[in-house]
Length: 212
Image 1 (tube, rainbow, N blue to C red):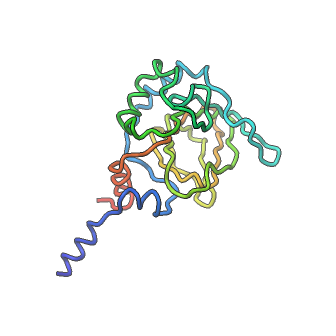
Image 2: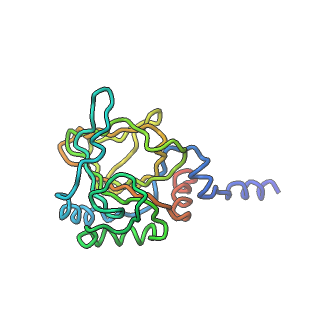
Image 3: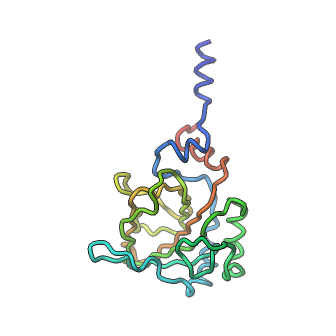
């Protein structure tokens, strides 16, 4: 009887809602494969269209430096901040066919409820400490198309997030966070605003907390 009980307890796993809304974890590495080379190639075809992102932000007379963005799914390619207007694939979609298909295959278009953006941080650039929202919980998904060795993503009281090329992290951006690129290479990530399929969340959590 004891063995049966222990086996039953051992087999229990939390569901996606608990993981994202109640676990309190600041980030969750998602078990997703990313075609980083192909996405980078497509980015190189459209990068000249990128615009400065949040260039009006200030902190103690400092500003964001070297941070630019380009929207693949949203209002238009050069609208990189939140908007309540209708979202759809933007004018760069035909030059980003592999990237577009990857998002549709991975997250499914019915789950999209916000922007999908390229986010570039130039060598020597930084993103000032900030919070993106007050509500607590895992939500935004940050995808590292590359991540130079000396580029670091910091989260207040949580440490440095272990980003590397191909990392996909579901984040709680109610935590104050900032990024510093001390490398000599541009750092390219993408950010997805939308629902993540429960199966991905639950599998990823199990990989992290219930190995073997």
